Length: 327
Image 1 (cartoon, rainbow, N blue to C red):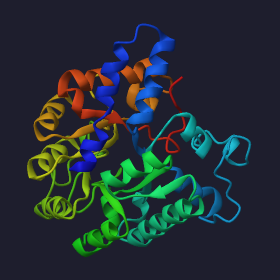
Image 2 (cartoon, helix red, strand yellow):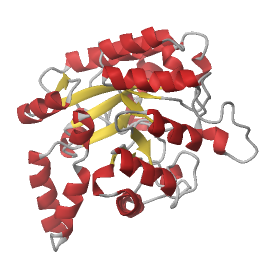
Image 3 (cartoon, rainbow, N blue to C red):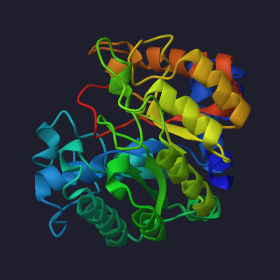
Image 4 (spheres, helix red, strand yellow):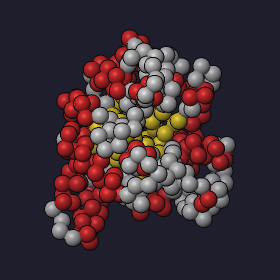
């Protein structure tokens, strides 16, 4: 709960920025605010790129600045390094321990463990710049120390192998959210593709076991992430959960009718239950095409603010997991 409260600073930032008259004043105001209040990004896929490009080998990985380093400099999927994180004044980053759907019922648990191991080793390699944290207090301490608070989110409910014991062990290793599905149904939850034309839902939301997953996450203190799930799964999870839920990288369905986005009726329920939508920067979720602008991103932020309220909107850019980004 405290971590969700810690995330809910964006609305206050936006409100104060609106009071500044000129662009230069707004930028200066943003920098003043971000020196005091940690900006938390909900989703970054760098760990999977490290797996793709380097097979998780970090010995020669130079994370300080990747803009001139092959293969990162030539990849449309690469956006993140320590220099750009500092320039953007990002105080806390959720790193995604992504598990592809092709691993479901095979080696999904192993892959999740390997990606968590990678994140922990990456952070440990840069102790002056990064620190692994698992609580809101940890984020605040890291921000005060001038280090990037690094958190772990597991992307894909199949990573738990339909086992509450595995879920508990992922928490012990530092995972602080689990995305209930990716682009495939699990045996206990429908993903967003179930909402697309011509598709037949597998379950119709969450199964009873899926609701037990949610309740166990509540008990542990692990946030329930509803990006990638179907609308019935969203509604079932919000009804079952005893704690606020998050969408780590989603946008507003009213502005772009992708099945990955959150419809207004779900936004209203989210507001009632205290949750947050962290807006994705992927143009396919912003403008429903390959091109978008930061003004389009702002329109999604403002729409969620209008429907759900200022305390229920954040940023989950999805960098390193997107091949197009806003101009």
